[in-house]
Image 1 (cartoon, rainbow, N blue to C red):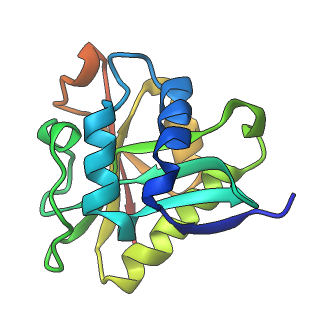
Image 2 (cartoon, one colour):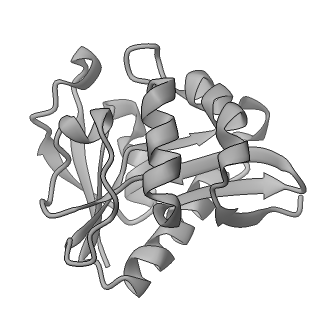
Image 3 (tube, helix red, strand yellow):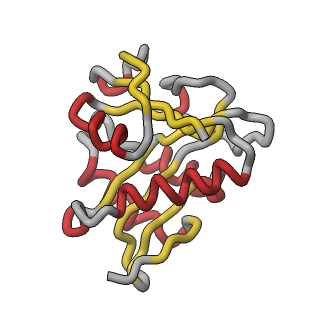
Length: 162
């Protein structure tokens, strides 16, 4: 399967929302307004995987000054700041028919390339316990339980130094 990676475009919004809602519970998923704000404010760190015109998955997150994500990042997205040390991941999702094809791993690699080119120190994210092995296999270190209250779940801080 021939996949290409590119920055998000406004026309991708509906396909992205469909994938977001397949990949996350209603409490975890980004709202339509939050996703539109991410597309508008941080396209340089919002990468989609596509096969021709079909969106297969995406990864998105703003830059941040702190090592661990704060819950307010899920609500409002400001433009990326050149001086921020960290690249975050708020969402990594792949459409159901394309899971288990290493698209998630490829999206992590693409974002790491962007973060390195922007001189970030690390990529930081939170995940549920079931996803820790996936992120560890991609070079992330489990730095323990997160303070996040997002969706009333137990989240773990995962960090990949660049």
